[in-house]
Length: 303
Image 1 (tube, rainbow, N blue to C red):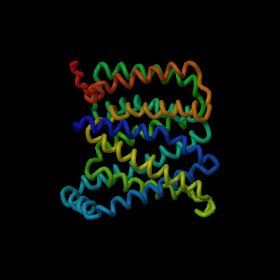
Image 2: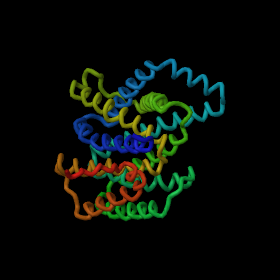
Image 3: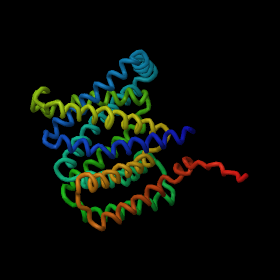
Image 4: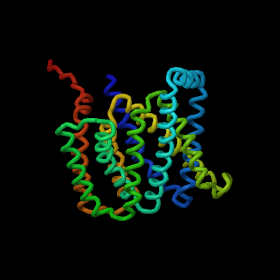
């Protein structure tokens, strides 16, 4: 598999995995949102710390080398990593609130506007270019989001917060290449956990939460947090921020179907059209990557 394919498949896989997380978050609907996100961060942080301890020599060596080479780069790395941890925590708190107290569709809408926001911010902040085809995809997405805004109009502030926090996270981590991605993720998990402590998230003792709560937290933290986040950040090594952000449409499309098929949420006719436009936008925006994935199967020779 070529390097480009690996980056694309890595980014695509991360959003496919994330797309199923609402099913497990719904299982924790009876619990406090802040408490859910705190324990999600805490368990994910412990998993990542364990991974880093296995490679502790490499991790410590990376810090020392970076600090010795350039103190300014070291502090830039520390700043970007800390900011990333805060943005992740803010994004997850907002997302869980919307999933459990508004609807999966409303949470999905937060990610519908994310690629447009990221593409435009990356254009301004990072100087990433958009060709004519990509501008068409952005236009189709904007039309789709306008249509969806008439379907899911409540809790607009939360929905916009979902998009902005993760958009700024992607852009900030695009330049955070001073250390291996897994090291940055591990530190961000710890930072996010410490920031969550300032919100006084612990409402019940661990024993009061029950076995079902901890099973869901372990699944959400290990399978639906650490794994896709590592895949997502790995994809940034070979994809620009706007390209990767456009793949996130896979997430709300899966959420769209799970909300209808799993939970029986109703959907307006215009929303169906809007999702269709999104599917077209995904293909157009990522066509150069999709082309690289197309494999020509050998023709069967007739005997």
